[in-house]
Amino acid sequence: MATFQHPVVNLDGKQAGTVDLLPEVFKLEEINTHLIWEAVRHFLAKRRAGTAKTKDKSEVSGSGKKLWKQKGTGRARVGSIRSILWKGGGTAHGPNPRSYDYAFPKKARRSALRNALSVKFSKGQLMIVENWELASHKTKALAGTLTKLGVSNSALLVGAEASRNLELAAGNHAKFATVSSLGVNVYELLKYDQVVFSKDAILALQEVVKP
Image (cartoon, rainbow, N blue to C red; front, side):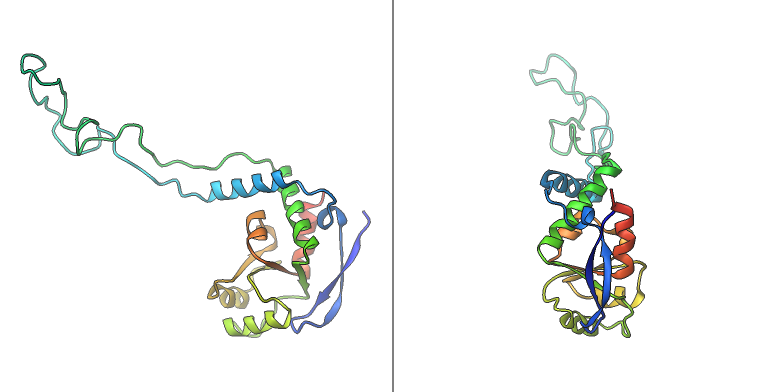
């Protein structure tokens, strides 16, 4: 496949070489917005806890004794104090623990990632650094490093492997998030204003999602 070169900078914001990227991954001519929407919907559905629960009439407290005889009282018939019609009774057709996940084909997920990466690239919101070898785990130090890189808003920081200093530094900042290259998803790509990859991370991701 034909490739194009994209600049790579070090953590001081200075030129540190280039990396070969595939236009089939980062320069799609037609963006499939519906596929991107479906990928985001699937991600959010999979993330739902699905732990809502109500009690039916077999689970609420109360005697199972019939309150009065069926006929002759002039009152409506009733079989249990736990009836769904009564205050304190059970709930009919209430929610139960469940998974909201559903099948989303692997090829579709990868295609959605290519579309999302192309969107970020076309908007100039994708940057590549040489590595994430930070000298400090301090959040202030990371903020200073990103300022040198020209990152002023929220950012998703992607490394090929988990960097302990990077995770600690970004974990205390509301605008920053870290993820490994194989954990990149469409939702977070679009959520953050900029995406900063390490060179190894973007090559690893490209290898996985290329058509």
